[in-house]
Image 1 (cartoon, rainbow, N blue to C red):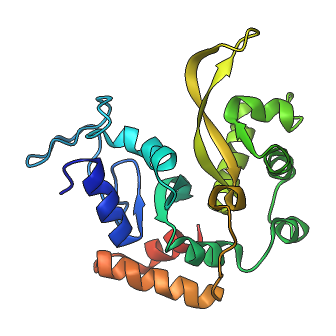
Image 2: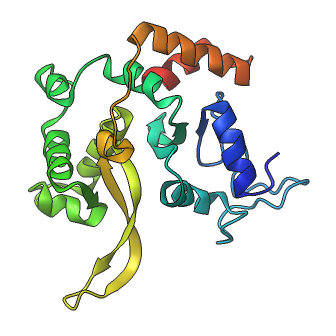
Length: 226
C-alpha cells in the first residue's frame, strides 16, 4: 500500500494506468480506497489538503510537477491516470486511427463537443470557466457542456493540463481554481508512434489481467474502449 506521493508515482509508472477517485471499479487502482475508508498501515487520507498524503492533491501534482503522467476523465466516464508509456495504446484503442475531423465527419462527435474542441485547439489551454464564452455556448446548459467535455476526454481528444483561478478587472486572481484543458497533442508536445488498434487493445487487456487476474472481460472491454 502506498505511503505518500512518491510511492504513488512509482507504483503508477510501474502499472501504466490507474483508476482515480479511490476505487478500482473491478480493474485496478493504485489507491483502492476512498475518503470513507481509513485503512491501517498507511498515512494516506483523502481531502486533508496535505500534498504528500492526500490523493486529491496528487491529481494536480502529477500535472504540475511531472511530464510523464496524464490525468483526466478517461475510464468509465470518471477520473484516471495514464503514463506516457501506455498513452499510445489507449489513443489507438479509443481513436481507432481517426483524427478529430474524421471522427466529426463519421458522426462520432456532437456539435457542442466540436465547438468546445475548436475553442481549446485555437486557444491552447482553456479554463473551464472560459469554455462557454470561447465556444459560443452561452445559451447551452451546464449539463450538456459537462457531458461534451467528458466525451472529449473519453475520446482522448482533450485532457486536463492544470488549474487556474478567475481574474478580476484588475488582473487579480480570486475564488476557487478552475480545471484547465488542452488538446492531447498540446499536453504531450509531441506525436506518438501509434500501434494498430487491435494490437493496442490486446496489450491493455493483458496488462489489466496482470494487475487483476479476476477482472471481468466485459469490464475490461469497457475500460479499454470507453
